[in-house]
Amino acid sequence: METKMINIKNILLAEDDPRDVELTLAALEEHHLANKVFVVRDGAAALDYLYRRGEFKTRAVGNPVVVLLDLKMPKVNGLEVLKIIKADEHLKIIPVVVLTSSRETPDLVECYQHGVNAYVVKPVDFADFMKAIKQLGIFWAAINEPPPHIGREDTPIQSGEVISPERKEVANEIPAPHPAPGG
Image (cartoon, rainbow, N blue to C red):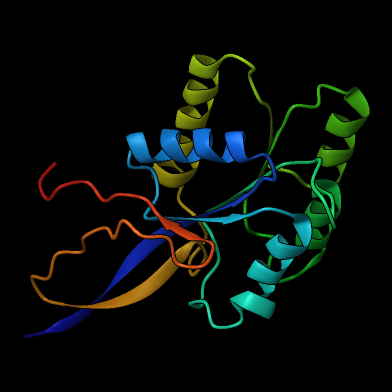
């Protein structure tokens, strides 16, 4: 059998609120918007993931197609994570979407000053939250074309092999389902 490489789109979700993590994952999963969503609970872990260090030193090469970043997180806040990403020559092309409950004008202005690609205030209503995540996912994981060699993990497969989702959590990696073949 012939082996070829396929592209897998990944999303990094940096969020410390377990409820918001659950809702975001449910919305992305419901709409099949990423192959894998990597969840980190603080800004330091987000940076470790991006720089492939600490518990992420053995993760596959490649960057996420988008970083969904909460502002108010422990260890390193989202604004500091944003500043580091956008100041790094190798990371600055990764789209970053701040997903926060803050409606404060200074937060909004400072995020844009540091290169955020989008700033989304988390809706309080469950249905509105799900709709907002769906729209974000559709744009960043389905419509937007990332720069070459970003957001994609090359995975070797045998010709004709079907990639199927695994329903288990591996470290902080949470697989999202793949659409059924032909669907």
